[in-house]
Image (cartoon, rainbow, N blue to C red):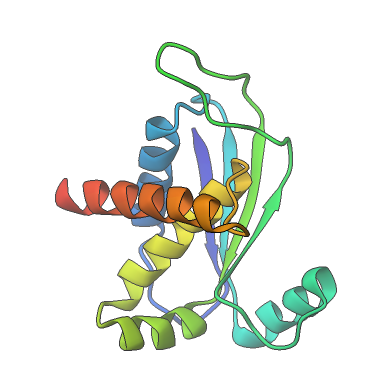
Amino acid sequence: MSTEVNNETTFEADGEEFAEFARFVLDQMHVHPQAELSILMVTPDAMAELHQRWMDLEGPTDVMSFPMDEMRPGRDGEIPEPGILGDIVLCPDVAAEQAREAGHSTVEELLLLTVHGILHLLGYDHAEPEDEEEMFTLQRHLLLTFLAGR
């Protein structure tokens, strides 16, 4: 599993922790071990530009996902083909505000946004209530399981 983490902000983030978490999530989702993923942390201005360009929405957002090979999760005993999963772009400044409101650390919020982004790359969505429940339950389970194992 190849996960590249780049931080273009002043936020102090442990890239190895994010790479380890991504590997954990992808292993749990039975994604091929040679899949590639990129995680990028950007400033609010850079995120606002991406948000405007790709979603036609104003201002920065917390996370955006850009899929590449339309990979899907596998099942026990069945692992899909390798490929490039895609890119996740995070905005630590937006995450910090959300973390304050939620009462947890910015790193925990960024990890939550990372799993959220990975699930989007794997085809999950939350447009419909039943899809939202499935996706949010899964992301909560993956994050809490990872954090409990630390």
